[in-house]
Length: 159
Image (cartoon, rainbow, N blue to C red; front, side, top):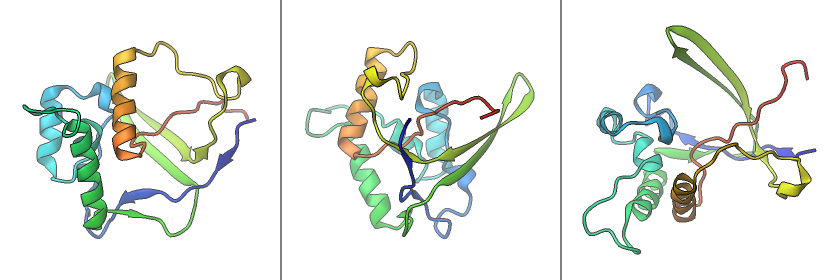
């Protein structure tokens, strides 16, 4: 069985970000380039600046989109835009979205889960993953030391 535990979440400070709809985005891998620019224009603290940093001319191993995302992330924490909860907790999460004009609500619990060896079968892998996106997310993780997007776990409703 997977070990699930509470954690101290880092989140937007409502005193500094009164309109969360200006800073949240869909997952990085469904954002088209023109949408990225539109999200960035909504608010200087829009999450797209962290989850989908843009390459710049002259990028190299020491200064690149991942290191810029890390610097931006640190700056937002220093400015108090992103704050960490004082104690650990489990977080209820609810999102509404449209698919072909039909409204759906996704409800979930956000928690920390211990990584398990693949062979154990406790945590099952995502199907059909691709090398380039995995490498991209790994570089962002290495630079920021943070997972900006939740990893979904699915279970039967009757459990």
